[in-house]
Image 1 (cartoon, rainbow, N blue to C red):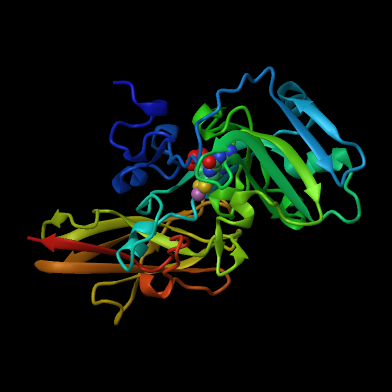
Image 2: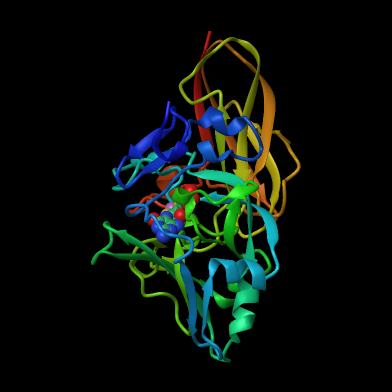
Length: 349
Ligand SMILES: Nc1nc2c(c(=O)[nH]1)N[C@H]1C(S)=C(S)[C@@H](COP(=O)(O)O)O[C@H]1N2
Ligand SMILES: [Mo]
């Protein structure tokens, strides 16, 4: 069976055009890395079909030598780097906020996140080739897809602070999981900003502008803000993937599994679970992180008593930050950054 953009047939499709979809939670437990057919897709506009031979990347603004690079030049003139990074949408977990009070936007569960190996050139190497002016402060990206949900409709764009842009982890990627970057994920080239909300990892990027202020693009200056602040690093969060919320499970020892993700390379320090609503906590087993920019998978075996059982999970990052308890504490009108405790209710028979 052929499916949209070669995705699994069992994806939860939030919108067909533009295509927005996430995997069912249990699919994310199949392997530590996410296969391309299960990787969530977040599109604000139609996927542009770009000719890789005609594609050009311009680098301009506060630089000494503006550049225009073809794909071949990008690949030939810059060192190749490979990195494992988790992509995560700021709207991941939005459905939990909608349960508090309605929010517009796709009701993402906690599958708007996935982990891949990305191959590309370092943004900082390209910026170094262009030569930064002294007053450079932000690096802005623009793409060729037209976002219909922006006002006015415009190409998708974003920016990151110069310090992040000059870090070794930010890539201009043409490869994913050892193969070519799929079109729906941004081919010919996308930005990968590990540890930041997915919206900063601009797909189909064709313009890079070095400037002294952040991007005026709708998706930086209006959307993806929380309490007036531009969203950047991800807040520590976790999800229970299997068994899924609402599942019937047999009484007795049950393996419960999920992921935890820390923002901006802070790493996961520990993951805890509770079977009594947060009075007593126990440690989950946390797998080795695949790399500084990756989620961690965790699991534990719980002896579930018959009846209705709620399992809650919270993670701590390396900076000592923990997930807040309730989605109600986090509710915001656009439904971003719901990093409240992960919860799953089971009917134990
Ligand atoms: N050009 C462009 N880049 C984009 C987007 C988009 O709509 N257009 N969506 C952003 C958002 S909100 C997210 S979460 C990630 C999703 O990346 P994925 O579709 O590869 O999972 O891409 C980001 N980059
Ligand atoms: Mo996103």
